[in-house]
Image (cartoon, rainbow, N blue to C red; front, side):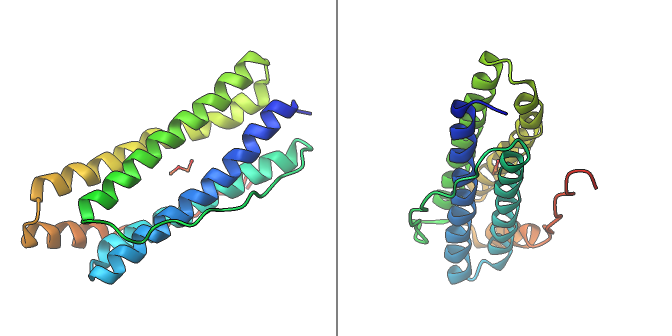
Length: 171
Ligand code: OFO
């Protein structure tokens, strides 16, 4: 059994991952309304991946004999000043999630909770990719500024992203 402190942190993380999905659906809504379907597609897939992350934490809590808690989700915005602001919101959120995961890793290390530490290694690696993708999106939009051709090219590129479900543990 894991400690109450670790359990609480993991339960908070379940909520944060669901919140991430919510945030990204809000960004998708913004792009859908702007007719930027490729960017909307990218954020739909991002939201689906966040649901996978939430379930991964949920399953781990259940697996170690804890009671998984599902906190109340707050509303998110679907309104952004421009595409760059939406991309920056995503980058800042991923940086926040990385810190949150490191906090759980630190707590697990302090308690010599090796199994939680091992479970979290996947998320440490995942966050490297998550931040890199979000940084690329920001950088690309900064390069094209408001140039319609550039925006069109980025949108087309982002339309090619496909959802790859996580392989269930033990499969
Ligand atoms: Fe976007 O990251 Fe989840 O964990």
